[in-house]
Every structure is written in C-alpha cells, then in structure tokens.
Length: 97
Image (tube, rainbow, N blue to C red):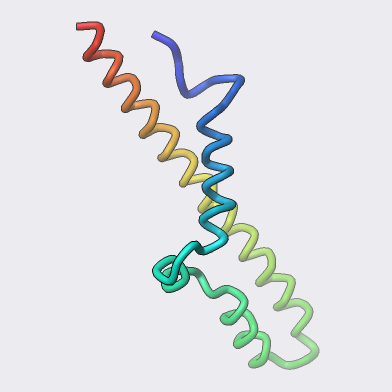
C-alpha cells in the first residue's frame, strides 16, 4: 500500500494552503465572530504599558502572533492530512477485501 503521508506532488498541502487563504479572509459574519482579535488585544495591552517598554512589548506580541499562527497551521495540516490519509486507507482496505 502507498504511503499517502509522504508524497512529492502534495495536492492536500495545496488545498490546505488555499483553505488557509480563504479562511483568513473571513467569508461570513459567523467566521468573523470566532476570529482571534489579535490587533485589538495587542492595542489594549500596548496602551497599558509605559512608553519605554512599548517597543519591547510590541515585538513580543508580534512573536506571539507569529508563533500562534505557526501552531495553528501545523496542527490544522497535521490532522487534516492524517484524517484524509486514514480515510483513503480505510476506503482502499474496504475495496481490497
């Protein structure tokens, strides 16, 4: 049986990248309601710190945002990919029997 988790021409990866672009565009009001409001939260935090600490805190918030997005993309891709591969292997297993 092929190992669907390791491929060179990764259609699933392309689809996940496309979905990420679409999801980040917030297609409807329900999507907007569940969005992480990072900019609003960051602005509130930055407004509450002394000016001498603002640049440092701003840099840390940018790192946090970047890290959080990497985390979401990683786990999203991992579970979509594995779920898709498990589904394909299940279907192939049923067909082979």
